Length: 496
Image (cartoon, rainbow, N blue to C red; front, side, top):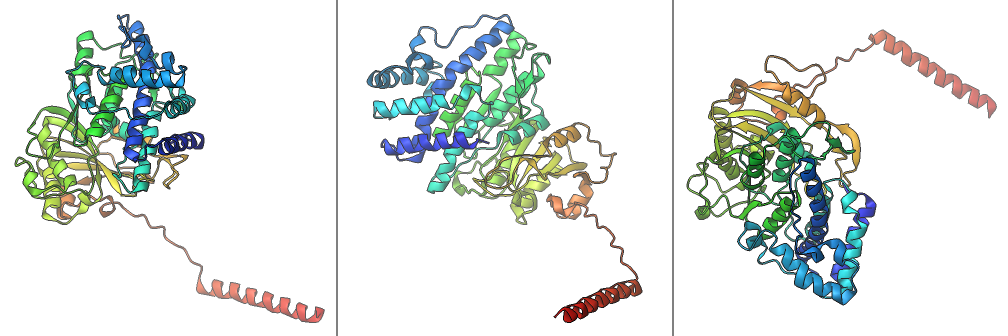
């Protein structure tokens, strides 16, 4: 989470735009995102150059022929000169970064630079420079975005929020996407799942002696030096697919993927639940945190979705199974209602997971994971398409490494490393030890409970037997207390 100093600087940046005539919260986020993108673009160009040198590959800078578009080349320009240069040269450069016909450029086509005054741009650039984004951990851009987006909820507008990156990393680790697989997020937002899937594959294919870990356990120097050139091209250009029905989110997602080294990101504008979206059985892995508690017009729903409902969280579960190839794997965040809802649609989704596919894990998340933006109770489902389920692995997460209040400060308690460790060694024949937060449930028991997947339905509650003294011992103790009180009162009367 952002420390207070960074929060204060972001608040100052937001107030600066407000007083500068840009009052719409989403417009503020867009303009700040463009400036951060300009800053990070140069940082990542340097990182990619070092990675290419490490792999003994040639590297062509994205700024070749446009050196004056580097952040470092224009941040010290005089005010009016800076405004004209950024508006007329740098912004068009980032809009057409991947060629005029690329998905990225098509998504950026409607992006506009609306900072009206040189003084506003100068002050904003100075604040962003003072954030020292380069020296922060890899989550800082996402944290900046999340904190800014939180203002939308406060303002009563648009209320979107991103998935915490440490939760994304946990899910990606459980699903374990591999080199050569196709990976999709059909509700991609800022593409956090796709970026982390990419980084996971790089980590698994980087020499261990190269990797370093920051204070949060996030791996660095993921050069992927073990990846052959042909496989690297597939990973960067044909492996990761994102879709979102918010054009602004598509832009944010594309920028996020470009910043992380994906040369030709595939993120498209699409309503993946609608009739216009026809993809089927294409992906080896699906990773997602789809919209909760939404509804879609019945006439717009794709006919290939079998679950009869207008609730988006249930329709997305059906969609994931449609998108996966047989043997494909999925990791998804769902609201708790999906686990125990009593409607026919809720039960149909759970029956589908249990009887026609392999539901492998249910991980209950603490209700504070999405604070301060939402307090909804959620769970992670991990499943494989095809076959049937025999046993389901449950884990009751109590802590995720952050306080579960609105402040979300770092704390020592963290179940995530234990979840990842136990997941890799899970075996239905081995029961948990006393005090552990995981256990197995058979599908027979789940069916007997109306396909209920809520963890409290099956979690064993251990009761400690209370041992009481014999009545005569208790009475004797009470008599001694009474005698003591009587003596104290007697002594008090003598003193008075």
